[in-house]
Amino acid sequence: MKTIESETQGPQAFIDGVRAALEGREISKIASFRVSATEIAVIFSKLGTTELVYDVKPKGSGFVASLKSEKVAFTHRAFRADIEGKLRKVMEKCGAKVAS
Image (cartoon, rainbow, N blue to C red):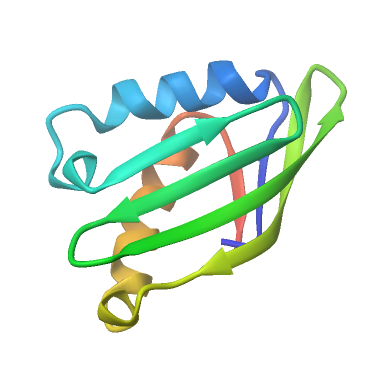
């Protein structure tokens, strides 16, 4: 996921919605988020830690987050596309445009 864009929500409101949408799903056990005024971090923790850090810029009443850095655990490389795909679908259901 290279960019995440929400046209109607700020970063905190968007991530709060994603967290709520993940409740009860398997991915919620391994995915967490850290949000600040300038960054969103997506963290996957299980048999290692993968962290994707996005630089956040305001855009209208929403935001655009661009991938700034990534640290991928060796044990996650084989499953990365699958896990990111599941998270991407949830983000899109929450109103985001996600580009790979």
